[in-house]
Length: 105
Image: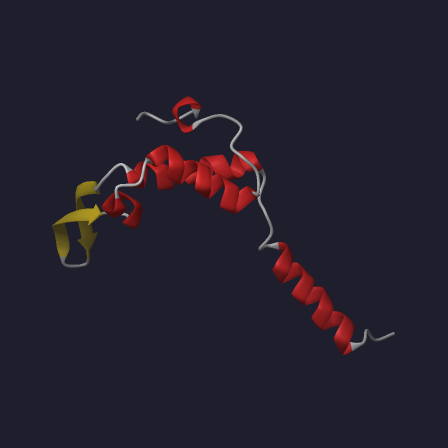
């Protein structure tokens, strides 16, 4: 028996839309910690290492600097965290940013 093309399309559409729904609040809190950290100010990193290829070994270095729009606007990291959790999960955070595991503000 062959499935009707319309049913297949509806099934695929439902699967895609299911990925767009709210996430559990605990997952949103973990994800939103990064947004709160970025709101504190510029983030930077430096990397140094070596890479080898058929021509030998070469030094490799890199520098990265990023700043979020929340940091530029001077938004409070706690507010950024709360809004992010609400947007992702549809619920308030279970505890404030300062009580979140992994937060060192």
